[in-house]
Image (cartoon, rainbow over all chains, first blue to last red; front, side):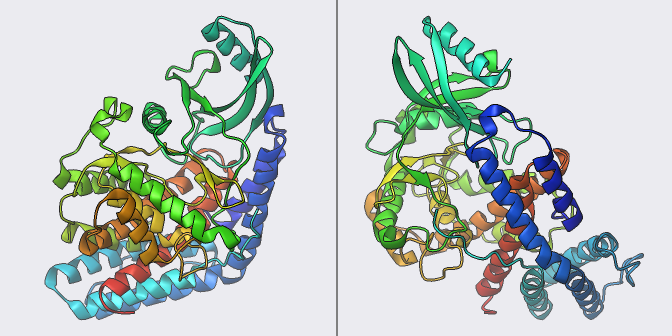
Length: 138
Length: 337
């Protein structure tokens, strides 16, 4: 999975906690500080929207599996908790089942289900998007 | 021993003359290799150089010899490519593999996140950017130094070798099921492109951020050849036009020129026509390749103890953006948007 907010914010601390060697003090450290700032800014969005996006995605995958006649995998019928880690654990199980369903739909030529899954991908990617504001030309 | 002392020891031994290193400074970016600028002083004369050293962990696993030979293939051939000076695959005094190349001063590499990246010089930069890429595509790789180390695929195998490689990266590094890129991989397998019209040197990472311009409309250095290989030149064109580099803009590619203009410039410089069906395949492939790189970034970020924020950002923000691009492309290809 992509790094979690917890990992990224811990990483920001770790990235800046060790004194750099002399040759990395100038532009390199300035660039590194800039990237940690970007991560912090985007992490604010993920903190606000991340759980909602995962809850939506897990429910949408269950709907697609049901529509496609596939069983909801064991351990993924409901959320086991509402932490990001817990939601991601269920999401991984559901995504594997969805990939299998999508392959089956492609092989059977089930265009309606294929298209429903493709539309879901668009919505899922949009739900998880992070909005990077433009930087001024450097 | 400091890196400066290691460099001085290496340069003194290989040149046979006492060499001093001045102003050694690491450059931001270059997540796949540590990059430093420095001046080497020999007999009172100073020369600006760049050191590219393998890191402990990396964004992309690449062969430094291929990158070195790629620089050597195009330096002095009418393209703004720095001179490749020295290669040490065993690391010598620097303990990790590295190479040294000439430094081109007076320019800057643009962040893909800046808007508008090139201001009033967008058209001029676009003309050079796609024209240079066309010139790379036009060159016969058989007579170039890179052919010493890069395998030459059959024209009808370029696509499968490229796809096999990047699918292998995804298989190896995927830590969470990637439903969107998996769908794209299957589509690419079901709909292979025609054979390459010709074999070319593929830069491999030809995009905004990997060249320097002088701020007045002139490209002065084509950099970061670390993924160079021999293949279908449409691979590079697809990567250069990838929406990821057109940050926030839909009417221009890479913040430079409209898509049709970019293709026309490339066709003029390469002497080749772009087959739309083949190019559609290479465009989707470019997005899949991007996804593979960002998936690797996330894995490497964790493996490296979360200490490299560039890997973190690439494995998170960029991966999410790439998912959006691929999902929309898959829908568009099915007439759903």
